[in-house]
Length: 170
Image (cartoon, rainbow, N blue to C red):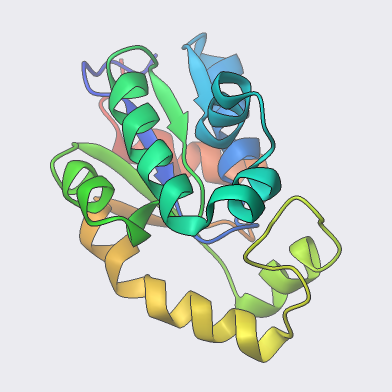
């Protein structure tokens, strides 16, 4: 059983499996879980693409920071959106958290996972090269926030085992 007073927070580029792994870990460890993007959509009564379209990315990043602060005090596992590190306040907040896990894999794998997903406004109509440019612009900030990096091209159970090896367990 994982024992930690600090929440476990998943960061990483879109399509790296933050939601899948967060839910899996939550189910197996019986811990409370939230997908931050879903939480934002519920609280704002709008989809992420609609928020981007109606108010722009900066407004979305401000909402993301607001709800991240709220969720840190409420949930034991949090899956963030891929661009959470684009907001300096969110980045600073994440740097001060203890259990930030960076899920990462090859950009070609990511591209195959997200190329047809209409729910990702920063990926819409982007080529592999354009997504790679965005990915590369974020890598150092993911690295700054995370205490560990896990290859999310592994199976869900392999990722789970790697996480358990690095967290305080019974």
